[in-house]
Image 1 (cartoon, rainbow, N blue to C red):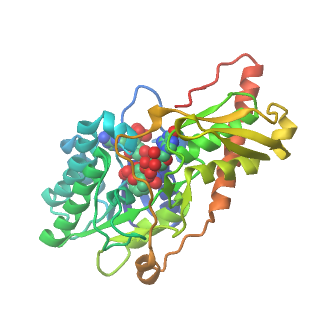
Image 2 (spheres, rainbow, N blue to C red):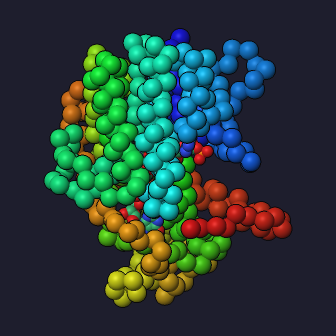
Length: 373
Ligand code: NDP
Ligand code: GDR
């Protein structure tokens, strides 16, 4: 039985990758951080009690900022594959916590690679690094592929640039099987609530159900190549199954703006929108109400659904990303399976379930979590 060790196992990609590897018959180990509250919401359905025999999913406490911990966990697990998904992954937050972001995202990757080397596991372990389309930042050509020069635009991207190159360096210097997956944005119903896609689906659903009055966002014109996390973790695994290690762009090749994402999510709920005003004064006003939104009865034509808030703009923005994944198609046989419309629909429908639960809780006098930064 192959063993995999996943850092960032409690995150969005973590849960999809665990599910994927368990289906493939792996024994899966994950590193989770100690927190004062349970932080395993996404993986709770996979939890196996430590007293069960024949466990195939095992969690270890750890942190990418603690080299001793990483060495000990790798020593204990003796994994065949390590997937380094852990990171302070929020671009906007990285402007507020640049040093921590560098420590976790850049040096954390170095610590893992060094741990493999210190333990003499260079020939046994295959290593996957969660690199990112944010490396292209201020894009130098369109679409972006493995040859496109990098131009990071945030502390997050600069940290990930170091992680990218140190992964390449350990491959070249020590002959390690180490790969960078340069993944473009990928989303899902378990996407963190403060990334724009989930913020939109959660926000619009909560407005529809009368739990929230308006959604505040930043740059409507930012354009992204959005895929589904379920499809992208398969690419992560495929990269570690080849005869030689290499770096691959993973993307859909289709681009949409934040504005288009809002319109698509609104449409799923039965709302059509008019955009009025300009720049920071722009608002989205409800033109017509049908479907789910009409059944719920909380939204009327003329209601303001979206407002712009300066705080969500970044000091330096990545305006537009579009990936060219032809190398992955050709060499890994990988292709995205989820269309943009289906991704948005799935996210909206799942958020409807959560919001309906919140409505019930409120009716019964229980407090709900209403934060929507
Ligand atoms: P998430 O933010 O959902 O998950 C990040 C994970 O890393 C969480 O499990 C988090 O733990 C953990 N983590 C954060 N800091 C540390 C630390 N210091 N030590 C140990 N664990 C830590 O990210 P995604 O699942 O969306 O992304 C996975 C990886 O892929 C990240 O590295 C991200 O930067 C990268 N990436 C993501 C893309 C995307 O569109 N999703 C695209 C390209 C790259 P906790 O739950 O305790 O916070
Ligand atoms: P990104 O994702 O920065 O691409 O990083 P995010 O969803 O945060 O932003 C995408 C774009 O939307 C614009 N935007 C807003 N973003 C947020 N979060 N909140 C808002 O209110 C808002 N309004 C507009 C942003 O300015 C940006 O242009 C994600 C992360 O998963 C990274 O870890 C990963 O490496 C990259 O994707 C690929």
